[in-house]
Image (cartoon, rainbow, N blue to C red; front, top):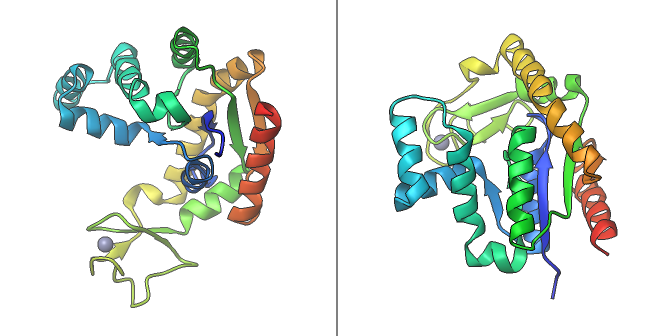
Length: 221
Ligand SMILES: [Zn+2]
């Protein structure tokens, strides 16, 4: 049986993090836990922290850390994560959250294997994000290199495929800078814990996946 894995994946937008998380989840047979997905699921199922989360989101207020952590804890207590592990995508966002996560994992005796920083140059991410086009109906993502088959009409739903207003070069550049500012302390924290590995995100998806699995297997082996 393939051994599981307990991972946190970091990386700026445009680094291909989402794609690699899906592939890693398949490779190690572990759940890919993206914050957006577990937030939606917790609200829908009406869990204790899902209900609290819902109140903040309805009021349009910033969700406090303790509630984010609560939702994560609820997800970690499910059977698949307990038996196989997890790949966190979009969490933790701050060093404080990383510390809370580590505490939680220590208590449950399921320590983190690695935090992986999937690294691509800013200019590369910028080019990729600027080429991105999105279906205005179902949000499927295309790019100028991989357009839908007929005239910017979505292959899935027939909706109009457009460049989102927040995908302009200026807006993307600002988002990438914000990411750096926000993530620096988080990276530093994982480095200090000797849990961080930086992986080159350039190349084909297969090449990047190979680099990732080599680093992970080396670490847990
Ligand atoms: Zn569509």
